[in-house]
Image (cartoon, rainbow, N blue to C red; front, side):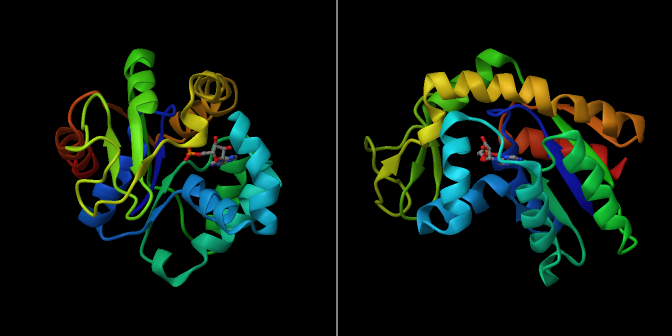
Length: 214
Ligand code: AMP
């Protein structure tokens, strides 16, 4: 199954993408994670993307499209994938359709994660990540047992650079202006499914699986 997860920053796409990936047996592809890895390596791509990411702006389409086409060409995507954070603009959505159609593939569904701004702000502002194993915590909803220490591996927790208040507001603004229009793109194709994602991840997972199987 080829799925797209749509939704504002903080709508829970990343958490659900991981759960769906193990449930459906297809890879979870997050361009944000790929870019953060490149920034960490200080590669050419990382150097180019970092200033956009730090401000909460989108990395240019031409770069993102090439990066994602290369990723989706890898063998693990042969039987499907879950895209978490791509496409984020109309040109990205159009190019994705063209790219897939060249190998007789298509997007099956675009699942829209609906969440109030209040809930999104709480999720983003409270998010902490383990620097060693990558586990996710949240100071409000899933705090670590010991402050700043990962429950799973004892690694140090950190806050993403773009999870500070000013950048969070810009990311939400950018989402409204550039990404929201692609909902209509998939609605028009009859592929848009809307899910309320304010419940626990397990409940949201159950709801998505029910909708996909219906
Ligand atoms: P995320 O982890 O999905 O919140 O993405 C973090 C940052 O990576 C975004 O704020 C953008 O700067 C960049 N990014 C991720 N996906 C895309 C995309 N599809 N198009 C452009 N920029 C992206």
